[in-house]
Length: 407
Image (cartoon, rainbow, N blue to C red; front, side, top):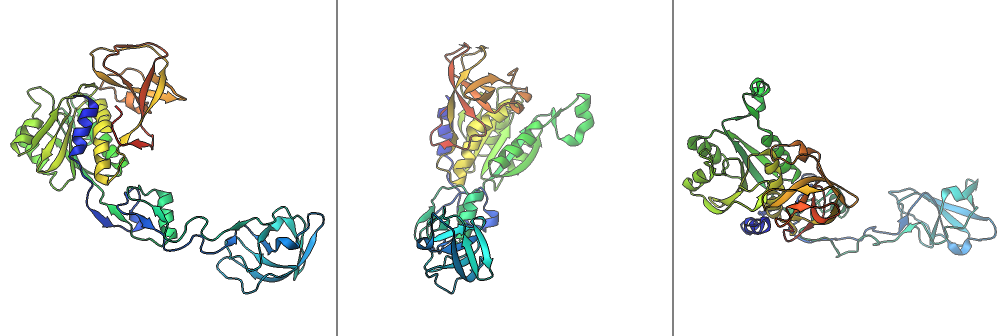
């Protein structure tokens, strides 16, 4: 099975989560489940774009200075009470409503105060300028944000500007994850890790971070031993989660028991093994209706397969219509020789349309991911890649997404 085929199967079993109204301060990165229309114009009235004087352009002269009578002062937060007439001006501040009769705001630095009640306009370059018109940003009834929009800082600002304080969004996914293996321990066994008798569970930290970076809530189920009893106990802890992710235990060794235990618990296996490297031993199924994705245990394989399969699943649960990262064309700037005829995802640095590998590409070399900003995709039918070859790369921090898996 190709990675794209596997991704489509996984997402076919992931549906957007139920919706609820959430306060704006708690809605960052949530996905809208409804169109939001504005009940007001924004700005709600013509207003000044800077500190200065509101005047009539008909009173200005390009040839000489103009002296005007100042009839009132209007700071932001107050409204004018007088209409600007011939040879008159209103002292005005940024954001304050424009008085009737005025069609220009002369910036303060182009004026000189003649007396307490008069001002001299020294430059008429801003005739009919420096005004923010009513509704130039948003019109009453216009849809300001549509269904499927992810709420970033700017979107939250837009909602607050129209007093929309509780948007309807999809619930944040709870993603339970666990590792397995007798050799894997948490960092509280530091002495054994430093002595070389045990291996630190780096996957616990990368998965927790990847889930958080995907705007989901991580639920750490811990590390199961290589026994059916331990695996069953840990997997039961995932009840109530929206997605279950395991690492290790899905290959063909005698201690790879995750798939067997899942089926014994009533799980239904949908796929197993994908034609790719790193990360071929990926499993997917349903456990009591909850999607399960079994990732390989090698640290690089875990992160690569998370990007290709888990992250899109999380985005689907969140209500995103575009769950997949896009790929971009790049030119390879070093020769590459590969082994098996599998689709390879090599850790690379992409800059200005060119790609170079981050160094050794073993699936246990986690520093190859730490240095990478992209995954260079090498097709299975290309065992060698000459310098200058154009390939596709998946940029790991690219905010743009697509509807179908491009890999």
